[in-house]
Image (cartoon, rainbow, N blue to C red; front, side, top):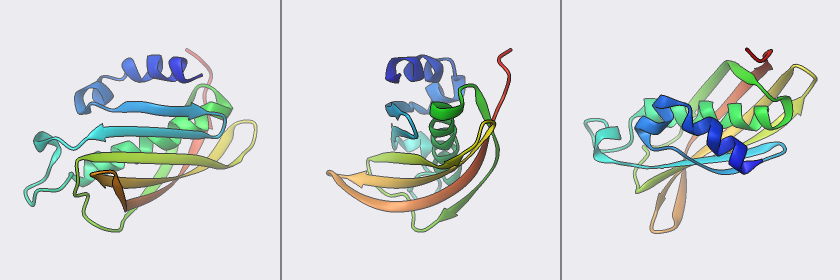
Amino acid sequence: MLEKGKEILSEQSFSLLVGAELEVFEAGTAELSLEIRDDLKQNNGFAHGGVVSYLADNCITFAGASILGNCVTSEYKVNYVRPAIGDRLIARATVLYSGKRQSTCECKVYAQTDGEEKLVAVSLGTINKIDAP
């Protein structure tokens, strides 16, 4: 399942641009990470909120896809809890509930420095199954 997920990620040009990596893709869960590069930081020196938000959105969609198959995010929200300061961002998402066509997923995003992780954002989203093109 992980290899198929990596193949899907490699087809997402924005994911390639920011350097996202799919670390876990199993039934009901996903994990994405990326290096916090200088070009992904905002003017105060921490990861831009848009990068944190992207990671949460894509991670909850992967978690939902692990149950539903082809899907899209229909809505999500992000609560930022602290600035994303560190070397790497790690997003971990789980499916809280899934029906036949829709999943509710949560994601926690962490900033990592020297192996220590600090929570920087929490996201909740609704993922909908779509028919394959």
